[in-house]
Length: 105
Length: 234
Image 1: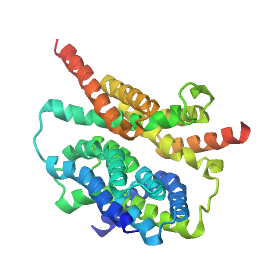
Image 2 (image 1 turned 45 degrees about the vertical axis):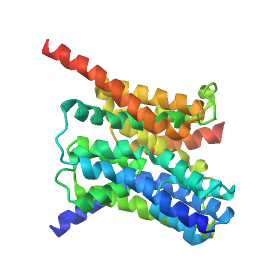
Image 3 (image 1 turned 60 degrees about the horizontal axis):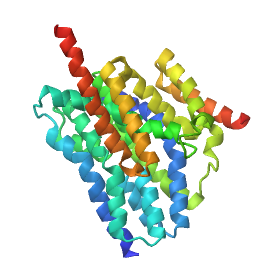
Image 4 (image 1 turned 135 degrees about the vertical axis):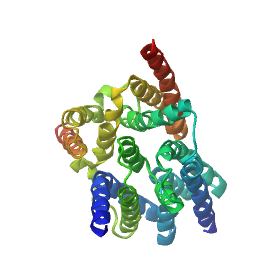
């Protein structure tokens, strides 16, 4: 079972370095305007790269995306987030509608 | 000063609540799975404390159970987590005044959900160091603790989806993505990043999806922004 400790040590290196290297070496460095703008667009790009598959592929296939309750649970969460600008409100609305949809269908 | 620190820490704790709602059942499921896979409690806990990455830990446990070699497991962990390079880089412009240990604390305990919160707070001018690190630490502690709890007690909440807990994190991402969508460049970045990521998942290379989606989306958005500024100067 020493294999696991190799995984722990190797896994620590390959997760820790990508997390801290950019923060350590890029912070406080003057960057070209274009690079700064590119970095400011990483957040929306990567957030939706994480979110979209979660919503559209939750049943395992794109073709049936309209039968996926996550797509419908997303709507109330979206509306509450948009109207109230409240993070907690959106999370509560999303959870409530996901639970309700599961209860009904 | 003391009460200011406490107020900041409380702010960080409050921010972490939606993340913890989503993480607690996943952490317990991880602990249970790890035990069923024949891992010891120290192995289970070590993965949570040192690797601290949900999807990678699930992958690692099931690969080890299937008798895969350590090199293959570490390779998979590397691929699935490489997206953090982008997240870390995109936070770095805000951290110039931070001390080294503070940067290590922010980056070392970074997860997708904490990143989503940090980037929104930083972009809106709130670079409260204590709150940001408290948010990270709160998630870190609860992730490790629920993993250990799941190991010994099983997944206490057997069907988290009955309470809608499975949708806590997606709902949070929706709320955190929305404020960016006031700029055309950010909307395009989001649409492009999401589409590329879905395509990669469908193609069966989901491990790279978040990293490549982030890369492609930000690059697409930069081009739109250029045209906007040109139009403004004209």
